[in-house]
Image 1 (cartoon, rainbow, N blue to C red):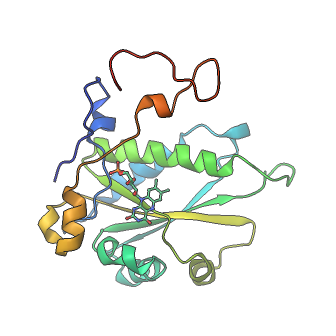
Image 2: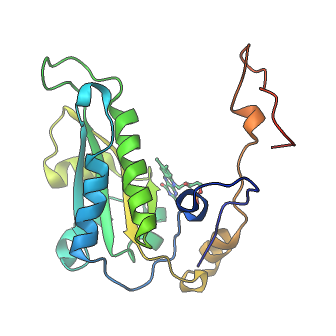
Length: 202
Ligand SMILES: Cc1cc2nc3c(=O)[nH]c(=O)nc-3n(C[C@H](O)[C@H](O)[C@H](O)COP(=O)(O)O)c2cc1C
């Protein structure tokens, strides 16, 4: 299924066509493509080049590993994410390696790495759907994740499939129009809350 951003501006194709599907086709992701996703994440910028992101990956080729990660997702996410060929757990080291001080930008930098990973995935025809709905205590225990590592989110990765693969309630959400706040609510100039002047009514 395709579900591009509804914009008249000339967005990069990668950004226009990316969306977060719930319906995944029954098609595995090549190991070489997975390498590329993590390589894209690896080359993201980060505060003091700390690279605080750490991932755990589980593919359906290893059903036990896939089931373990899937079991750590909220039930509402398991409904659709269990069909994705690849599941990721996305974490950050909470402190700087060089001095042990808290890294307040770690989650920001994980976001940049996920942005890179998602752009690379889109270029390969893959989709990424991130999930905050996870059971962090269960995942920490299952994987033996140390206390100084923050468990931020999970992600489902695979080839988007047709919405009618989904139960009807989810299929309806999948087909719903994608909406965004106007730029005037997001970008200010001169004073907090004062929109910068823009062409047209974006
Ligand atoms: C950090 C993060 C956490 C999210 N958590 C969930 C989730 O738990 N379940 C879900 O169905 N979607 C989740 N989403 C997907 C968002 O709902 C989705 O990105 C948003 O509605 C915009 O849709 P789009 O990605 O298709 O543009 C999450 C997205 C992000 C970035």
